[in-house]
Image (cartoon, rainbow over all chains, first blue to last red; front, side, top):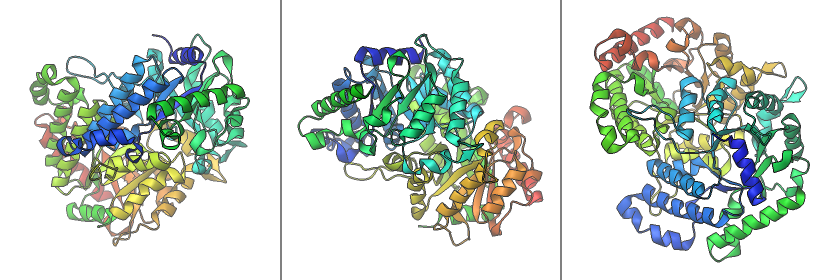
Length: 304
Length: 304
């Protein structure tokens, strides 16, 4: 099967875009027409199912609108998990919708656990759990995010799936205010997140695609540009997944110098500033999302 | 609402037990009678639904069997997530079954994310996500496990739920071989996991129940007894959730000196050695689980 990294590189080249559209649906920010459509269904289907159906239509609408402009999409599992089994089912439908447009899907789950539990998280994302007659399909992600706190043996069961065309993005230096607390403690004169970057490099070395990128990438935030560049220096051929652009305050300037290879080598995630653009821009939520994503694509092309 | 820590202390006292039964169902290890019952349903219901139904009956059977002997149960979300929406629904049913016996449920999810995403993980476990007419119920856990890598602002949205009677167990020094890689890097002369313990103490200080324990506890493995004692010294009034006993090699001796307060102050998790005891002991899986849990209870009482 084709490497995840090659598929992502192809998507970046084909759309001439490093935009990753984050799918973080929030009920309070759903467009009025969807609220009016699904609110009456809550009594019949239950709250969870009605909200999940609303999220599914909303996210599918966003995907339709940004498919030509986005390199990939990143659904955030937490927003779906809140609505239980119905949310999980809607998440699967959203992933399938992205695949209709050949958009790679990075499922943001920040999982990580050891041994058979770690393997089970891999199966949940990528399929392969034992079934009676055939393995379970999993939710169909192309890549997931993973947390490194438990160590290399918690990442290995996820990285294993790279051999079957999947990818893993390991948290290094995240975009939040509290990130420094653990990630920047000094270890032998270097911040901890660079020790994690070493781990990303080791785990990713056996999984380099034809495009020269590894299937094991790193999450590194745009809100800390100096640390972001350190991660890039440590990982010359990893794809970087860069959150923190837009609503969280990171700018295109923060990305200076992090391009690598001939397909950028990074994607920049924006969620709220794209999917809820209609709240500021007015009009149809899909059109507003397309405009916001297009504007972000231009903004980032200038800085490359 | 009663503090989570008080409810756990009550359960420990009532059962005179520090046994936490881990619910980690694996299809290959299901008892023959359940396989024979659910295998034929795969064609009709689909693999995921058939396996999920099998897990639900199995885990409910284990809960019935150990309810008098266990202080709490710990379902591992990954094993259910593998089977998608059907797995998620079965997980909810297993939690409700434990509640019928007044058994506190620690949902092992190792989540952690920031801002609205962190809040969404809290809602997924404990309820409270916005609905059209009423908030979504969540999966109904009493406590969850959380990973600290993203920092204090990723833990705060979970700890918030302590005010509503829930608990959070934050990973400090885990039980796996790779744990040391990040958790034991030296920071100002102390291992990193003790810095995390400081964080557990700070976050837990406002959430002390009548029993003197905090609703914010720590996960610390029995496979590293010296580090386990260091965590206890740093956290005199936290509940410790201790994995690594039994199948992973930790022994009752490893727990020497970690008791604190008048309700032990810790619970010891065992999963496979209890729920799959039937494979060695033969006979009914429920009876084998009850015997294994009872034997573990005795083993641990001697070491207290």
